Image (tube, one colour):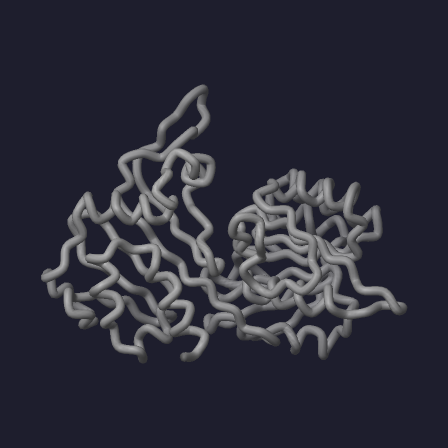
Length: 310
């Protein structure tokens, strides 16, 4: 069984038996490329690959048009939610209010529903109407091209690309590579600020993906996590995803002043779009970013590498 099929099989354990029975019958050639599985009340199951979306029928058939012979009910959603939460939805309330749960294997289930608000703060999501499962993929060695060009001097690197281009996959592989490498006879210390629980994909405190000897701060807001790592973990490199706001910029400036390199990611389709982004200009002006790595639409594939000016 290849790794992609294994990942798909692993995520099936999170569905109720009715949905699982249909999904397990999907042809292997489709299973091998599935990135997301979406279930919605009163709708068919929809699966997404890199380039296509398909409806799923009750016998596992996939088609570009809805066969309308398998419809998800409210009870299917509720049963699946119970399985996701190990039959204790209340104990997962803190994750649910953030809109997602990280699953064993590093996969992720995101929710849509009704916000429960108290004192202008979302404290829960009720009446879950859809669940989107995102299958985590690991591509060991996908960052080799970066290290072949720059060696271990990769602090100040920004990974840019459109959604689903593999930014997190590259970050994870860079963490693995760096934290298992030596610099002046010492292992390079790497801290991961995993605010969205995607890089290390920790499940019950255990990273589900290979991140080498990296330290992981799970669920910390990036700015707070960066400062905390500098103060307590003495990293040589800090890795985080989706930077952009003013708090992130100030924290990155402090990391630069502390001699700590940053590797991070942002959504952008080109270096020009990145450079013109209002939310990233403050970070670029700090001098903490030296280069940008542009990803292709194929997950984890590098399209180009560019020097960045202030």
